[in-house]
Every structure is written in structure tokens, then in C-alpha cells.
Length: 339
Ligand SMILES: Cc1cc2nc3c(=O)[nH]c(=O)nc-3n(C[C@H](O)[C@H](O)[C@H](O)COP(=O)(O)O)c2cc1C
Image (cartoon, rainbow, N blue to C red; front, side):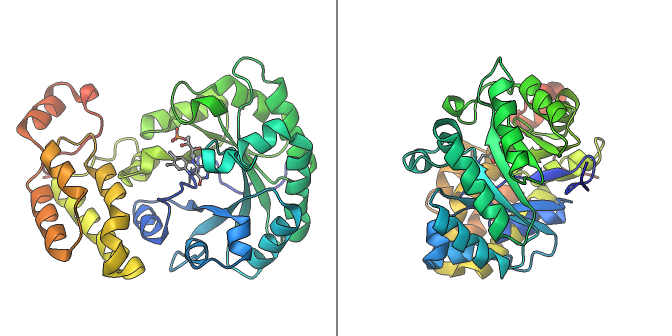
């Protein structure tokens, strides 16, 4: 087995389009995330130097292990994109062979590339391996829920093409991000390969992350939606007895995140770009619907101050009572105070 990219027990932050930017990564690093990814970068946009793409492809002040993920299918474009990345400061280059989003699937990229043109997908992967100075990895999905053979066969080909590790999301293309995760298929791939397999799917808190590793036998797992609005998941993974945030820590984390958003995007864009992340913070933590609705209009420092003041007042009494009496019924935990 070649040296592991990720140490045993590693919780790798997934690439998430529209989320895993510099401010998000700064935040999760504070809570112990050691391995992270940029969001997926379109190879063609990188080659043609789109300003937005170049910004997505920046490391920023992020000092930890950071991978970059490419999506694409045209071989010369992928080769050129890998060469551009050779001059950047990343630790790993990942190839997206798992995305089911229509704008990717339409071009027969992501998981459709793997399913409908596996020979082309493997050639694309080989192109990246020969052009890149970095370890090249792949992120894909299971291809069948009951029969491991097609997923195993495809992953073996990726391994033969030079993959240093493969992340497998245990859901079919048609199920996008919902429904059960088929641990047995991930486990079968792990058993049949001599490179590390990273398990992905359904790690929404510390306990479900541990279940993912246990049921797949993988030594590393990838966290995706469980970290949105919830950087504390990394603290909970490292220490199952770590407390959930209290209202003061919760408010300060959002404040620091917004400071970084303003630094990164400037006041003209930061509030708009931050809206979806702010909704993730407030989701499932007992804040009134009216407060969540106000996030959709956030557009200024004054509006942010009002929002943070309301957040600092804490969740509704009903939520706090539920948390005390039926903690399992609460989607995400937020306590009144640690002391
Ligand atoms: C909004 C959104 C954007 C995503 N963007 C990417 C992406 O850019 N690259 C990628 O490989 N996967 C992407 N994914 C998939 C996740 O990385 C992950 O595989 C999936 O959410 C399953 O993990 P989970 O059940 O822990 O969320 C995205 C998922 C969501 C919900």
C-alpha cells in the first residue's frame, strides 16, 4: 500500500460548489479540519482564465493540506489545466467523476462521464496523471446499489491509471444527495483495491461520521453537507464528548466568518454570497422563521449587525426545552451557555 495521503481517522472536507471558498475553509480550520478541498473548478474556465474561476482556485491564507478539484472531459483542456495547477500551491489534484448536477451532466462530465464513457473518463484521468506534478485522486459514486462489480471494475481502472486514492459517495447518480448510503459497495471497493478509499455520504455529525468509517472499513471519510453552517462537526469528530456551540460561540463564529467574507469579496458582493451559508447556520437550531427570512435580504453592515444581535439572543424557548427533554429530536444542537 503506498503512503497514505490521509492519516487514519482523517475527516476530509469535501469540495462543495458555492461553499468551500477561502472564508469557509478558514472557519473549518479553526475547528480542527486538517484536509480540505476547493470547490470543483471547470477545467475550461481555468484555462481561459475566467476571473471568477481564478478566484475559486486560490489557496489564500489557507496553510493546511488543500486539494483542488477539476471537472472536464476535453483532453487538451484537462492537460493545460493540470499544467496551470502545477504552478499553484496545492497538495493534491482531484478529478470529479461523481457530480450529477445538470450543468455538468449535460456535457457528459462528472458521474455521466464515468457511466456513459468509461474509456474516455479513464483517458481523461490518465491525461491528468501524466500532466500533473501532484498526486492525482478521483471522486466518484457507486454505480449500482446491490452489485459492487461495476463500481469495483471502474475504480480498479482508475487505480491502474495512477489514482493515489479514490473517494466514493455511496449513492447513485439519480439520488443526488438524498437517501441511504450503500456502505457495502464502498466496502467492496476498499477490499478490492490496494490504494486508500475515502468513504463519503451521510456524515452529518460526529456519530454518523464514525458509523461511515465503521461500516465501510475505510480509514478516512469525507464530510460534505454536515459541515455547512456547522464547522463544529470537526471538533465533534475529533472528540465525541466535545460540547456543541453555545450562543456566544455561535454568534462569534458567524461574525468572524462574515469579517473574512468581507475581506474576500468586498462589501458589494459579500452579503449576497454569504446568504446561503447564513441560512445553513440558522437551519435546525431553533431560530424563528422570520429571522431566517431576513437573511434573504441581507445587503449591508447595518443589516448584518441586526442579524447578529438577534442571533446573540439565542434560539426560541421551545427549541431549548426540546433540546433538554428530547435531544434526539433536535436537528442541530445549540446550547444557551457553556458555563
Ligand atoms: C450544493 C452541493 C455542491 C456540491 N459540489 C460538489 C463539488 O463541487 N464537487 C464534488 O466532488 N462534489 C460536490 N458535491 C457532493 C459532495 O461533495 C458530497 O459528495 C455529497 O454531498 C455527499 O456527501 P454528504 O451526504 O456527506 O453530504 C456537492 C454537494 C452539494 C449538496
